[in-house]
Length: 338
Image (tube, rainbow, N blue to C red; front, side):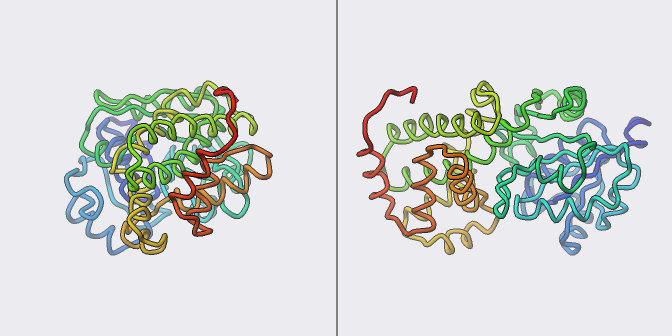
């Protein structure tokens, strides 16, 4: 391990599957990493077993990864903090983190989704809690935790208004099998990460009802249009949505059963209530809350998002999924670019 790694560890806050996978990836490069979570009993088991048996049992911890149960100890001497928690917990974790931040510490996150109560994107929440001067970044893109933990080839995006910080963080993450690209369009990258979760629920509903590949690809393509339309309305660069954090993440989440959002839709198509489907998955399903938040944001910005809207109505208004598809197919015809 290098002297620089010992001097400036990175603190990863959130010991679920994705937080664990990112901690492992950072540690593979020799960076000293401290992994923190709220469940002290589980953290103790992880420290003892040198792996996360619940979420990533086949991914042993590198020597430079330490499990730390105390938040102040996890943050001590850290230069970078990476927050990896579900969106409903994001503001609370930032609030707990804020009193311990030194002026030169940077904060990044892999949290996806609009805040439900406010409709804010994660970077807007971070600015409210941490102030306008803190260097911030978001990690997003087509990644499954299990495959990152296994060291399989992966690419993702690091976005920050500070291009130099995005480049530095991307370099820390990158390795022989992991490539991080950079962007300064933090709005677009975050919107891609939020909207794709709701659309993946729709893909699960469609496939679960047996509608086939034609329907799935139509959903993905028109869903990308909805994502782009909302993003541009909120100030994003349209080109962002043709990259890893837009189209890439959308295709991944809509087509592979490692996606909890897709499995959630499949379960509802099979007859489960949303509550039963959530309980059966046993982990956070971001698309459930995302559908509600996106509907509110779309209404506020007067952006038409019919696919996301019918996902909301299936989940929250008991609209039968087959009726939702009939409704979409009977919409007035229009030019594809509209």
